[in-house]
Length: 155
Image (cartoon, rainbow, N blue to C red; front, side, top):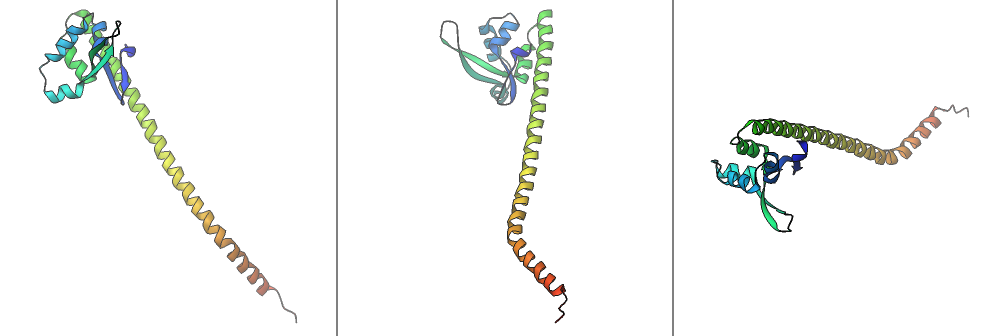
């Protein structure tokens, strides 16, 4: 079931073509079911994105990229034991993909935060090196002067 879900722009999605194969329906039937869904235009826009694919004859065909929420709403109307089993498997697969994305996003954030901390540390060290470059000769001169003043002058 995982192969029926892909990640695009950081979001787990599927297509009407993959849904039609999984539920043994014609792609046109799935697209028709999408068109007649009783949902707001905003929900439709966010969860059913128009796209295209090239079919076996080389023709450009309309398709939909479908989010998890869109999938759930769409397949709620599909009936039968086979449909119920597939709905459960799809939901589980979407959840796994989302869990993976969240984990990867957390790793990415941790890595970025570590990078920024190291960058700050290195920048601070570089500034200290520049200061040291200027302070070292002055401090060595002061130490030498102080050493000379500490020497006993017998004459």
